[in-house]
Image (cartoon, rainbow over all chains, first blue to last red):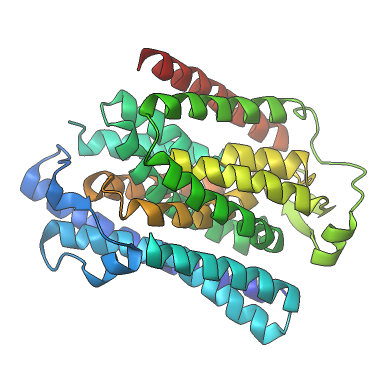
Length: 118
Length: 275
């Protein structure tokens, strides 16, 4: 396996796992929504996201109901590329590749700040 | 009020076309959802979340197959995520009509750029500059259509970074992956082969969208009832599209891209005029 093939495999695994988890939860949420509300999609406050930031949204996910399940699906999805960025950073640190440590650290830092402060 | 099946069908088709062309999907869902009666800002906010799913679903397959250039993607992400955050903040404060025109103008620039290189199957005579050599920007992938492994080198990553910053601003503002513009930058500035360009664009789009989406969590424009079916539809379409991409020629990929972008351009221009 070449130097970066392992990184490719790690990234691919993270993306597949994150998306599969999110899709499973989202499908469950939509089926529940359809059974209880019918086909019309409601743009009401119950389903509206309004948080101080993404991490604040994670801390205050709706505890129950269809909106809560949908919120978990969206949260899992949002976390997928974030974890991918973290895994890439860890990989390059392990490989001691200074150039790409700096590049991935920059990306990870900007993402973290934006998810904390939006 | 829009219904669940309409959103699912629109999103599936968008994910399918988006993953083949590197567009990301929301360039297609946003205009179609506005036609279905969804306010453009709600469509943008939900679209940018669904892009993360499209990108991640298709990119997993591209990365495993060696079609995405991960190192180039990571370098370019530095520029595009900063642009996306700035763009998303701007969107909250500008009018919907201006967004339609910006969307149209953005699609037109991508159309013109790619059309100039329509006849080229693979880039030739690429001389790497110092920055590209320093970053080790090269790669190889197996092209099923050509029946052989294609090795390639990239060039001008710094100039491409500037282009990606602009793509990021557009992505954040319009709730799209800005794949059309990213593909154009990859191919015209970095001289990336078309399929690698689509696959790398798809990979980067998820990160750009995450940066942009973070702003929408506090804007009050994001509805789970729109985002959830879009996530499901676009991801399913993207997974099917990623299976198709390796088996069609670069020329067909580009023609498909141009056709989709042209239709969307006309549509958004009309919406801007009629708004």
